[in-house]
Length: 347
Image (tube, rainbow, N blue to C red; front, side, top):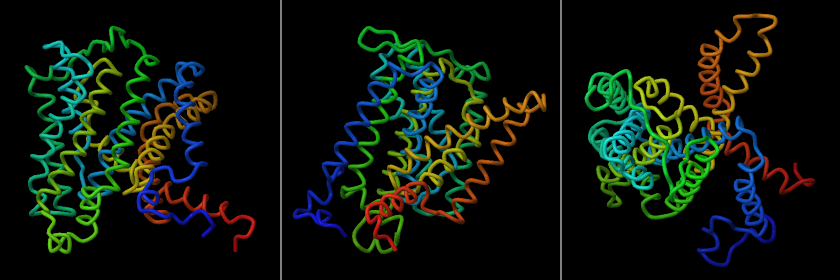
């Protein structure tokens, strides 16, 4: 290790930003986030909004699956519950936008606690099947409880209003989406270093040993489900306001698999991996769409292949990262930093 990597206090060793260089780069990053909507075009703003929502939701799934080891195939259902909660509160009771987001997260967290209740008795594949059942039930409810959800027609969501300003465009929605993503990332990063975060990791790594150490497994797992579902519910509410409509087709099983792909590709059990995975897996379909557009002069039906090719690519990415880089993009970045830290004396 280099001089300067050693810390004199525990607080310094646990600091989020350990060196002046890191703090300087984070300042540049936040400045770039602030300037971005002033200089970027509408399409880039649209992509940035999608990435921000994906980051919030991926953080929730990573806290549940990556940190606590509770496999979930119902993440899209949690997002859908949050989205419908936001739509109902906004349209029927005109609840202000700042209150809708935590309320949507709370309702989704309650649903997550119900879904996570079997986690004390089952785990692994059996827990995955339980969350899959919750996904199927939620999809059925979204379609058939027409008095509440609007059925297949869904619910039109009005543009949110924040401090008297109507956020009716993608550019206007950029501010609350990025703010929520930053706050969610900050909370998750600090949670990882806290006692509850270490409790989640202990349950993931060796639940029997964790129980012998005095950890209440049932309580820890329910807390993980509640927290992960809260993140998903907030992300679903942001999606509802961003799209201005909520329909059942927005929350299929494939979306749950998509978010599993995000945390696998980004790096399970890491906060930064959720960000890397969200950015990468959001931009991949857009890159494919651009590639298919270039092929249209040669193959007019190229765009019809976009959906199946995207699904195949997602599956290939999941298998590839599991086989060759199980720690995801986060570990690749760490290796790159270690290489240049010792360069040119690497061996």
